Image (cartoon, helix red, strand yellow):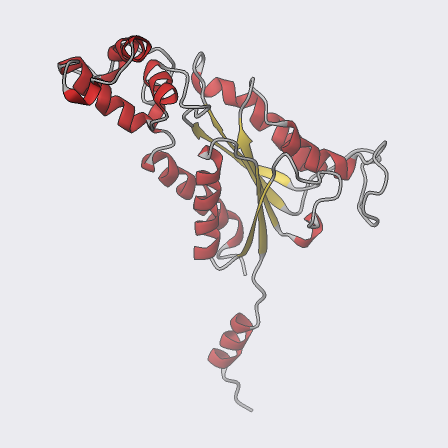
Length: 269
């Protein structure tokens, strides 16, 4: 009896169930969300069934609307605030494995009782950070805490990714950002207007400005233009923070995840 191996192999591949991944993230300024969406792009490219869940202030972190056990791979990410991730992204993992004193947690979850050996399921953690003082080092505590809570869930953390992200709290903390906040402009508009104001503050465009308006514009002059020959003296560790994460950062995020999926999940079956 002859066997058509080509047909058998084809049928085996067609009946293969796609692995499931969950990208769990918190993004207050939009920086971390950009990375999360690039991760989803890679999962989709690799044929994974990928779900996104954004954690917010109103999220029920005691009883989230999903089960971690339903997924083969977990990504957890957030911004960095005072070197740590926001409490909600930590609690939505911590409360699953440390339910007391929280009552009413979902039944059937495996709670922490003793030593944990993470695995066989895997995951990665990721953050976007400002790093104004010490640069990438400021992301390390947040990455480590997310890793610990992930491994409490028994997902082995096999990778960490971080990249800079601009501050976006009401326009930003720099001079151009304060001008943008004062007038209700975007930072790009503020930068252009400051440059025109610096060239000639008496044009009709600025005729209606009050004394306070002009004081704000004067304060913005120093950072509106980059001098020829390179960036201005660094006021923070990443001098180009206003443009981060940029396309190169996001491409690095894609490469980071794609290589992990290839190394751990492809060519082994």
